[in-house]
Amino acid sequence: MTDYGSIYKPHQQISTSPSPPPQIPLSNSERDLLQADRPGYGTRNKFEVAFNLVNATVGAGIMGLPFAVSHAGFVTGIVASVWVACLSQLGLYMLILAGNRTGIYKYAVLVEHVMGRFGYHFLNFMIIIQAGGGCISYFILLGDTIPLLLDRYLPQYPLLSNRAFFVTTVSLICILPLNMRRSIGSLARWSMVSVMCLPIIIVTILIRAPAYYDKKPPHEPSDGPAWSIVGTDVFGAMGIMAFAFTCTQVAFNNFLTLKDQSHNAWRHSTIMSTSMSWTISMVFAVVGYICFGKDVQSNLFMNFDQNDPLINLGRLALGISMIFTIPMCFYPTREAVQKSLGFETATKQPNQIQHYVVTVIVFVILMAIGIAVQSLGKVYALAGGFAATTIANILPGATHLVTRFWRRRSSSTKQERSPTLTTAPTLTVAPTLSNTTTTGTKYMDDKLLALPGPIIASDTQSCSSPRILPVNYNSGTHNGKSSPPPYYNNNYYPYDEEDVSTVDGGEIRTDDSDSLSSYSSAQDMLHDDEEEEQRPRIEFLDVVAVILIFWGFLVMFLSVSSVLTGS
Image (cartoon, rainbow, N blue to C red; front, side):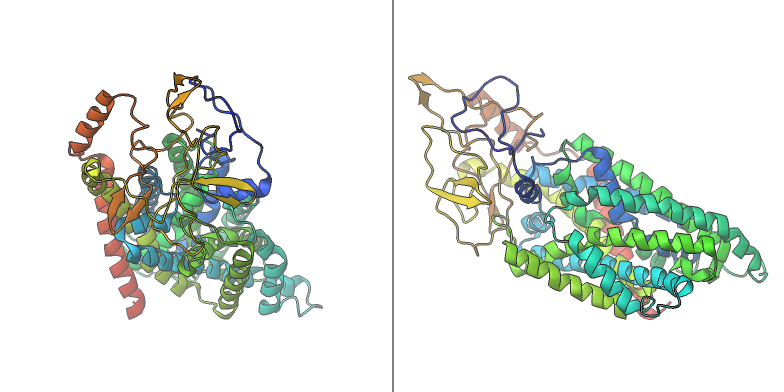
């Protein structure tokens, strides 16, 4: 499976043996470009991807979880956190399943496949709010931590403790260079550094929080939400938890960096990341809740003394963690902006100038907002209740159901329609074999893309992901003998049997080039048609998808209402 989509040697004899085909080595820049766009070029193992997902999940949201538990009540808060984390993991898994069914590995393009062009722009807007809100909250935390330490330990340099100066300087020197790459896989090792800072943060709070518990004024048992079953604002807390446990916006980015791009490998990565994220987050939340009760603030460190040396160590670790966590939310924000501007489509990637210009402009805007805004509570609730529930619950559930039921019913009529070549051609990332002709070619970073159709203009937009074929195979005779079709092995090629190359006007179009090549005999074709005509059975994930959609709308309405009414 790891060799799918590789560049093959020209004039290589097609073998019918199960051994993987040979490859031409790719440079780092070439692999980075391909890894950001299509499957088969992943280089990261399951643990590296899990750490990337943890880093994308455990960020600014962790600081608001004690605040969320205090509003939901202790018992309800713990139960709700498990529920939200499980739904988030299932949403991650179902989203990749939907992508594999359609051959689409861009979240926005997949939603367009399901909801049309409106869905494409709607999701990009939601990702900008969710991921951009995450970046803003990280900048807020960065400005709340290290400048305070510099003011405490380096008072002779007042400029360093200036919030705006420090955040701007660190952002331009340390954070912006991390955002210049195209593939999120380049952040894997930095993500490990960020995740390793989290135990320091938690340990410092675990050690020092009991001392602050004794300093609290005594309360009657009925005062505050301490040890209460149900709090005063359960659904407002749900919005904060949704923000804290959502990383669906980087699901495809991380899946494409996975070396073993099988369903099992992705499931293992998401389960590991969700388990680690929940454990880290809830230890943090419970300790903060127990120690400060109803007085806990949205930034937990604001409850501690500025002169506490051990807490200041935790503040330093949090600041370092934020430096390496900001890029994890910036990547999907930039991608959504590029898609909205038309720089990135199913058939092209932004050129170097577009990539760098969008990166710098979006980064400066988010940094400026993070410097100007200092309230985390509103950012948590609005981004979580409005955008996170849509991205993590509603849309994954909808894409799963549509690609399983509606698409199967539509595919039952595909034999009745003549194949049509639309403005989104099939891309073959491979040199053409001998005795094979193509009608158009296009170069991308010195890699030949053979297009079975006319070259598409750079501004052409399509609502489908390019479908990458292992070879541009010309069935026929070679040396006077009939040539068998190329060897297809699911261990190497992760695509679903039913694949979609283009979507036009809500109608699924089939490719001219391979409409019959996937069948080894007429009997197999007949058997496939019979299977397509059968109604899919209701499975566990189908029920979960319905629950995701209903739950997402419920939390969205109630949590946003809570914020707007000020309750």
